[in-house]
Length: 258
Image (tube, rainbow, N blue to C red; front, top):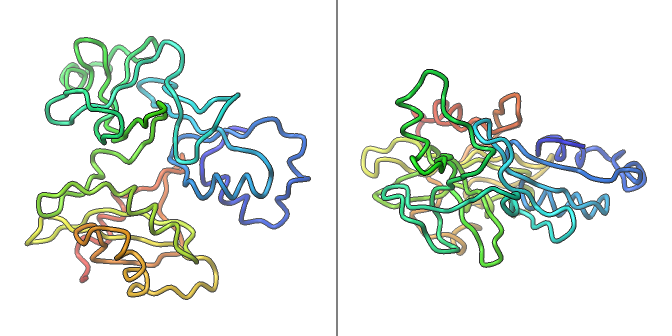
């Protein structure tokens, strides 16, 4: 089964979805949007199956995948496919970064397109002369070679000169009792340029308030990373591919009081 993360969270939300129901299935695959590590773990606990997460783009087709035979790590999109090169670079200078450092994901290989149709300027901005495509995705590669996607460059929050990667904050919020999922984004601030905001989806009946959420995050995050605004919503806005539309959240909450 090829699905987006939303498929799997909806399946887990149905009590009829059991180990017996999927006993005939060989493989579950996820892509198109980042899957929460918690979803990966819960799915294995429910079904005994480890979802295979991988990473691709319109401009590149498939780039990386967790192994079919081998460890499929929650939160990771695995290793480069045969013939594909992946590197992490400094977004400003283009210099290659060390393993564990966060930067821009760049990809090169026979899977990468030749350019945007009749848009030479856009092609020149995103496709380097040596064939590496600047994906616009921020990520890191761990010591074992697994790639992790931390969000889109445009979703990076810059507050008071500090770079804040939403994925780190989302992971901490999602791990709290009563939380189904969250989306962290930046909203304008006259003093700091941007501050962190969070939209949070709770489990039915959960009694988690904004103050309790912030108190739980304080020991886990630096002060400048703590959300200045928390909104509880029934569901996060998504496009047809299941990707959270943070631009919609930014537009919705940009002008609201904190």
